[in-house]
Length: 204
Image (tube, rainbow, N blue to C red; front, side):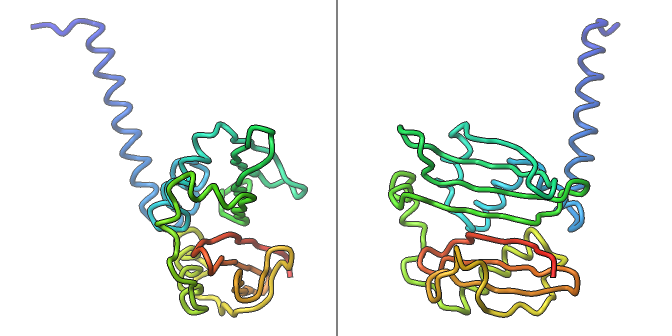
């Protein structure tokens, strides 16, 4: 029995899609490609939710708000910017993600909220820390984030200290800092909420 011409085309297209999907999936299974896959918005969002770096309600609210913007920062790096606005156009909360141009390695991440009510509005309060994190617990969360998005930095000597004083709040928002001889790296944890709020790479 002969297969109709249109059916042959359909089968051919399905085979192409299947091969492409297998290739893309296998590419993201190793550490190097896992970093480069950050350019996929869904990938980054799913990682933030799966590892409890931010509550799912917060992530869904940002993703579904239609507030995605992309632009180049002052150094020429691509920035993805998600935000949710209130009825008057004010920002309720936002995420900014900056990556290197060629390889999509994460160099900056910032989550900021301007209205605490967003956590109640997105059913996120039960998922936040019921008790304030200790410094050790904060560092554990910071290292989980590093291991997920910058595993190449996990073996650096990360020390607790002050970092970005516009965000840092001793005892409430703490920072861990390291350097690799070329760059300073810092990651900041909101101990009260149990959230990763900031990560960046800066020149020494």
